[in-house]
Length: 156
Image (cartoon, rainbow, N blue to C red; front, side, top):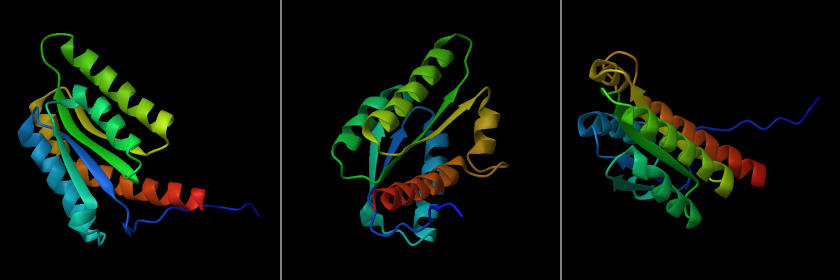
């Protein structure tokens, strides 16, 4: 039988950072509420969360990298919302934000969760921020806690 490593959904004493984009602030606030409510529901303490505000999703990777480099955080949860407009700007922002956050994961070994909504319409964003399809901030926090525990178990 192979050795298996299963993560747990226990915040423990992990320090978690949340990077929140202010652009599309109404949606971001809903995602943040879902993430922090989930943290508390799991038994996490508010003093173990650090919230960092950035102008928008495009600025997330550089801040996420600086947070990861401190080696203080067991995971970083990135929350924001990009809604398609009438120009190609959306495609550039989404692509570079996703790539940048992925790069921080790979380069630092700190789990960085992509909780950035990428929607065609405001209605889609509202639904994914809790109106109909669950709150993606909640799911991002669950992934952050799970990954923090998994990496801790792997490292022993």
